[in-house]
View (tube, one colour):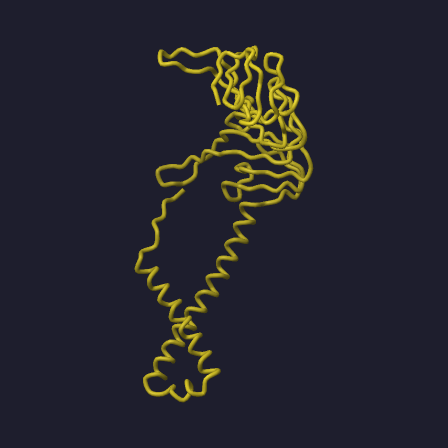
Length: 265
């Protein structure tokens, strides 16, 4: 993005002055329209001041009108360039998108650089009956701030029902997050919100818990822990762990989903 500084204070003050003059002119016109006394006093220097104020007022109102038209034209063009709707089915970022898909583009006129897509009907993606796709894109620029490319950082899928991911049953009505390859295709599961039916050491995991895949806690000596899952429990839901009830807080699980550490709420 090209850095743009704020407008100078003098310019802002001049604009405010013109707007104030236009407002004063409108008030003066209303007084002239409804006050015979005001019309009688419109002579000598008052007449000259009224003419000058009329010129400023007309210029200001015309400027506001042209600015609004230009802004409306810009918004219409921006919507066309950044919020297109697919007229026919198309494959983008490894996803077969149906006709009628509404895109939001991070780079204008570049459908491949979409950061959100909403489908007219569920589309199966990565085991999720998806209605909405969201992505975070890292935009690359050169020393002159010209865009040279982009890299998708993750993929967030929101859809219908539940989806099984890495052995967990996830609530698909809440975004399910995946890491992606540079081309945007799914690389691995990252996190989701637990649906009903998950177990931790034989105990039901509360619905609404946040499930996050990890690569193990990194310790000061550089070694990694055996934990592979981080579970944030809902503050109002409990889970029986090692004979004790835990409400809220977090659990760290190993690859076999055994609790290796508890973090109190």
